[in-house]
Image (tube, rainbow, N blue to C red; front, side, top):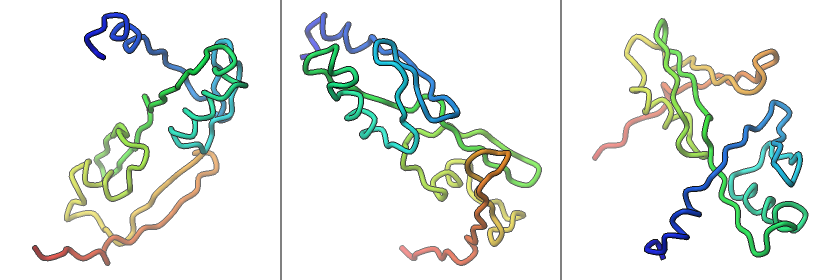
Amino acid sequence: MMNNPTLQQQNTNFSSFLVQDNGKVYLPVVGEVEVALLKLRQIDSLLALPEYFGKVYKGCFVRSQFSNNRVIILKGENGMVLPIQNENMTVIEAIAASGGVPNNVRAKNMRLIRGDLQAPNVYVIDLSTVEACGA
């Protein structure tokens, strides 16, 4: 299938659209679509429906992906921005990708801050109770 030059050209013609702070994305032809709290597969299925791209393209399929989601990890005086590669990334995966928990950081009193920074949801996480499994 990928030996067909027409298909190769079509597969590389992707557009990027930004989800606004209100959870909506504006798409040409379709208009504004609410995508907040949806997983990527749900967005794909929604946009392929007849009331969206399905009204313009017969038998269409949609493939969504994250392009600018990130996690900010602060460790004492140090910090880093970590791009999210997987929509199901866990807190443990984010910490591991940042190099783990240093010895001088208290794993008992970690904070997960989510949502609007003007009124964030703050969760206290105690990772000191997590035990390593023997090999």
